[in-house]
Image (cartoon, rainbow, N blue to C red):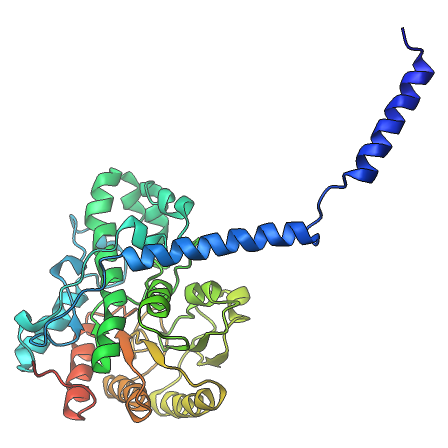
Length: 377
C-alpha cells in the first residue's frame, strides 16, 4: 500500500506534467482560430448550397410586370387581426386601387413562391424557427395576444404562411430588378426581424434574406438599404453589423419603437426625424441624406423600405408627411437609382392607417407618370 505522502507527490507530478505538456487551447491559440475559421467556412458553404438549391428564383415571362403580389399576402382570421393597428389587408387593396386606375391588370402581377424552411435557414437559426411552433411566441412577435390561445397549425396557416409568401416576394423582387431595373413587392419590408429575433409585426428577416440571395445568385457585391419607414430598421442593422458590403441609410423617428440603441451603432448614415416633422423639412433632409450617401458608398443594388407610417395622422409613426409628400419621397429614391443605373426593389413595410393603401397606389401611379417605372406588359 502506497503511503499518503508518496501518493500526494505522485499526484502533484502528474498534474504538473499534464498542464505543462498538454495545455488547454485558449481562444487566441492558432489551433482554436483554425477550428473557428473552419466552422465559419462550413456555415457559409451550407448557406450557399441552400441559396443555390432554392426554388424562390424563377423565370418570369415578359408578359408580367415586376409588381409582386399574392392573395395569400392578406391576413384574415376571425377578425383577430384587427386587434393590431396594422392594416393586414392593405396589400390586396393596393392592387385593387391600381387596377381601378387602369394602369395594370391583375393577370400581369407576379405570384411569388412561399419561402421554405431551407430558404429561411439561409439567415435564421434552427432554434428561432422552432420557436415559431409556439403560438405564444408568435403572438408576442406580431403583438396580437389572442393568437397565443390558437392551435399552432392554425397560426402557421393564417399568420405565418402569408408572411412566408411575402418573404418569397421580396427575394424574387431582387432577381426581377436585376433584369428590368426595378421591382416592387406589394408586401414585405419586415425590418424589425433579425436572424435570431422577431418583433414589431415582423416574423421573418426578408430584407436580410433577399440580400444574401442576391450576393450568391445575382453577382451583386455592394448593397444600399434605404430605410424610410418611420421606425428604425433594427433587424437588418443587427444582421449586417459587421458586413461592409452593406450600407444602411436609415431615416427614422428616434422617439418611437424599437428604441434599439445597440442596432443604431450599425447605421452607416442615420437621419433622425422627430415627432411632428412636416413634409418640407422631411424632404429637405432626404435630399441631403441621398447626397451624402452617394459620396460614402456606391452600390450595385438598392433595397428601398418604403413604409407609409410617416403619413400625417399615423398613430405610431407620429410624423406629419402629406400623401403628396410620400409620392415625392418615393420619386426621389427611384430617380436616385434610375440616374445612376442601379437596380432597385421597393417594399411597402409599415403603415397603420386605412388610407395607406391608396397613398401607396397613388405613389406608384406617380412613378409611372414620371416614367420612372413602366407598368406596360
